[in-house]
Amino acid sequence: MEQKKLSLRGKNVLGLADFSAEEIRLVLDTAKEMKNVMHRDIKKVPTLRGKAIVTLFYEPSTRTRTSFELAGKYLGADVVNITAGSSSIVKGESLRDTLYTIEAMGVDAIVMRHKAEGAAEYASRVVSPVILNAGDGAHAHPSQALLNLFTIEEHKGRLAGLKVAILGDVLHSRVARSDIQGMRKMGMEVHIAGPKTLLPRFLYQEPGVVVHERIEEAIADADVIEVLRIQLERMKGGLFPTTREYARIFGLNNERLAMAKDDVLVLHPGPMNKGWEISPFVAYGDNSAIQEEVQNGVAIRMALYTLVLTGGKQA
Ligand code: CP
Image (cartoon, rainbow, N blue to C red; front, side, top):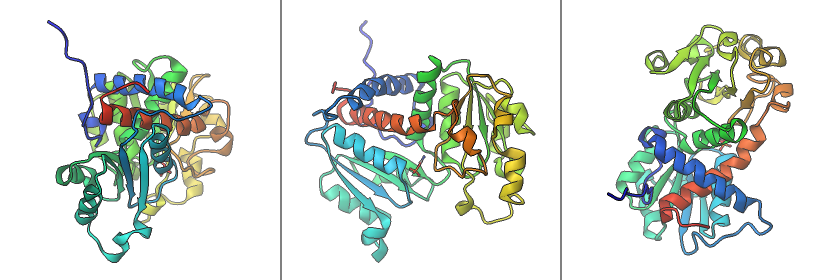
């Protein structure tokens, strides 16, 4: 019997919890082709000609919003950006009415960032355009986790069996939650360390995740280290003594980096607090792939658009 071809056409990208390993593989393989398009002199293909995309951001963003915009433009779509501060949201328009208004203009996809967990899923229930979650509270940031997987595989040639250490503020991190889901699905070993006040309880029950008391234990022999941003803006205060103390006990510096494998890959979703969770020497050092993550973010978002809006027609 002929096997049905895997298709993501029409799928809402809400989180990696509802992506299978095969679906993640399809996105990563498609992103490889998209990266070739990015390296052409003329970075423009007609894959999404005639499609309209709105990015709707209720929270600040540099990387995610810009890369979703560029990805759409490289694929030939019309892309319009709405940020909370310069729209009728400041006049009190509700999320639902904003979504209805965008839908009425005939858009095909909405890329959405919101401080409330579940906001993207809510959007997927009330309007018909495909929803791509660009971060909802501390819940999920699926495209960031996919670009992390893509970057790791580019360097290591595989994902399964690699040891990754995720360090720092997991409590407020949607990136860490999506990373853990994606990395486990792709067969990676996940080790976590950070201040106890910033490690949510669920981590201790999470299958395939090892939580360490000290970051040195998590780093030992790691293939990949992902450092998380200290999200001071989301903290009510008092979760650790001072940023200097944090850097001393939990910061990734050259001395700690030496405990990992020689070719360890360092990731950080950005923006970085250099001198706090990561030293500038590590951030800009030979093991760092932090700038590559940004570039790969465009390829991953091109892949997601192509797959959910066309089912994977070639560029
Ligand atoms: N990694 C990330 O989400 O960065 P931005 O907030 O700049 O989009």
